[in-house]
Image (cartoon, rainbow, N blue to C red; front, side, top):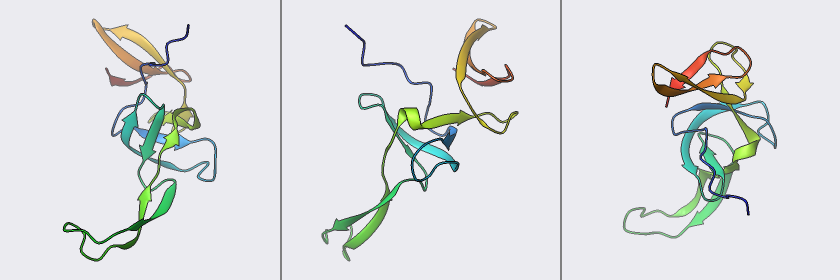
Length: 111
């Protein structure tokens, strides 16, 4: 039996590059990660229109635009050194587990 609750390599505030879909090639910041459904919400990507009823918080209502989630497999973490979307590996440096770029082996950020 497979474990569906995989620990994601992406986190909130990571810069990612979209590699599939209508937003292919664009980069943005991760706003949220949903581990159970394997989806991420990226800033200004996959914008959808939703009809909103007037409420106490939003008096006007109407049609609003917001970000929709993208499947985890359709984004790659952006490496600052390579300036490309890269696959992520893990290494232990100074007794801390860190994420590393598979292409240039540079440390992306401490875990």
